[in-house]
Length: 288
Image (tube, rainbow, N blue to C red; front, side, top):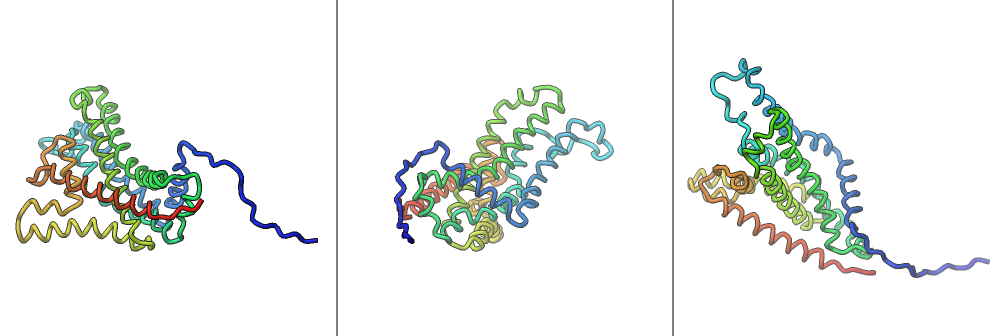
């Protein structure tokens, strides 16, 4: 005798976990690290940190490298707040960070493509936890290349010098490193996640992530060549980030424009991006 077994409703109780976003972050990181070319790209992103550590060593052992350096100490070997600003806001590191963001293009786009968002939210998972889980992936990548090396530089500097004189001279420097690193993290999280919500095709999103960053810099160069107005630098994402870095590390900005305008543009973008992302996620119909 064959009996048909119909649908049985689950009568259990949904349990809210404290870090319900963590499984999303863990799975997303695993998928990203399995992507082709990601691991060599991520390893390459640590190359600037390696060269800056070499610079730290040479700066403390100048007597051993006189054959390489003649005359006064080169400016790039002067370990001061500008040294850290040049690392965290350097053209090469920012370019590599954008390159890594292209691997995160599918964080939301792939879920939209496979209509997975209703499945996420049908579980004991709030929409804010979903966004935190996705943003934590980007935060991990950015912070491991900014805050972590920056703080390690300070430790290495003190170890090479054999004293705490450097930290006594700049007691605010660790805080500046953390503030700017978290600012970069917030920007890249919202920049990448916003673009990831605009298409179901992660390849298109990856192109947009890279193209918008590059185009903003090219647009500034093109317009500046014609009008010679320094305020045109506000069109460039890279220069805006560098202007803010100059203020955080108490350095003279590269462009004769107040850092406040760059900060205002970046913050305005982040506020608008957060609203658009939240609106996009809230529009998903939840079936429990």
